[in-house]
Length: 192
Image 1 (tube, rainbow, N blue to C red):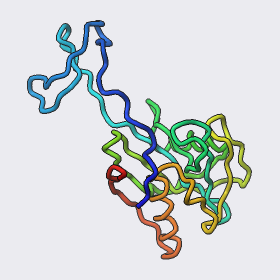
Image 2 (cartoon, rainbow, N blue to C red):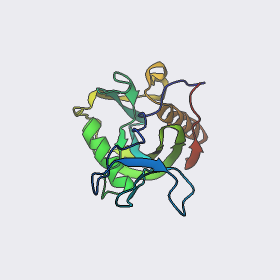
Image 3 (cartoon, rainbow, N blue to C red):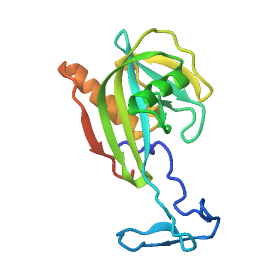
Image 4 (spheres, rainbow, N blue to C red):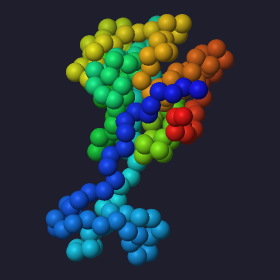
């Protein structure tokens, strides 16, 4: 079993002060709700915390896969698909394109949605699109130490960053062998 950790650790679940009135935050189930939430007893604001979405691409150029060597923690100095947290006011596709430009300096043509991976134990959803790179040239950004294209036989399996990356790559290799690509949705349990 692949034991590499997930993309990022979850953010702390408890704020100390209300962002609307600065009163201390408490945790309890609000009236009419069914979950413990961060809430303000003073102004009544409920501070919902929802999963964060990681978006990225599986870029291919001349049958080779683009991977980036992470320059930042977690999992610095490991290889990953270009991906990162989705920003406000962007679509999943726009975020995936942006992350690919930022991390690898590569423009891609976005293909079909490829993997949607629930990672509930770290409060995340990972979304990867197939993509065709417009060039074999790379220009890694500050979050990447390197970026390069790998033949399927050259993928550095022992130095991949996250389980969502390795599972997406395994699906891709299987689909290349079958000659048919399909969208996949699945969950990753906590690593043992």
